Image 1: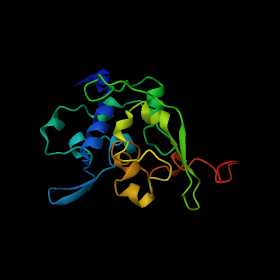
Image 2: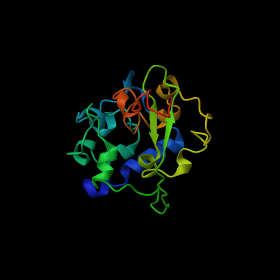
Image 3: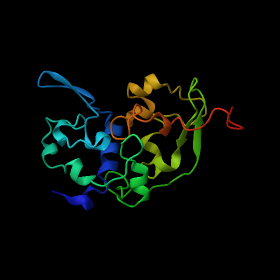
Image 4: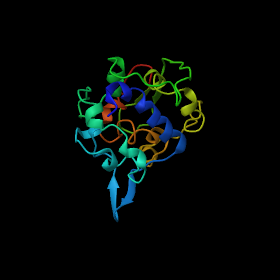
Length: 195
């Protein structure tokens, strides 16, 4: 197989391909039955083969050459809900994502947060640009997924669950929005200056 070193950059490539193509295999018919994303090593630690993980297209011959996630991600840190913590994986130097599909793109990491306050009774959502721009260039999200203007994106959990906004990646190649609410809803509503 490829070994962990060859795995470096795979996550960014998969994210870019899914993001740019809009392809998601969360619910496809397989042998007459629907199969769902989520039962795979990244989320649950289950050693489910790539062609049965609900993310990759099992009819594509490419699944035969991909390294099994259980081998590639062995020992990766997980958050308190058991999902791989990709930010910690990156910060710990366990992976080195390729800068674009061919590796020649220039990354421009930006370090500022956007606070979403339209969260009902839930804590506010902190969207950290640094963690996202270490993986993806700005054009992956702007303006196709998010308009870069205050109030220009009517983000809702329903929209996210349907694969829009954050749901373009989260629930497909990044941690799912249903596994650990506190990863996003992390800002207390009574925080001074954010009411």
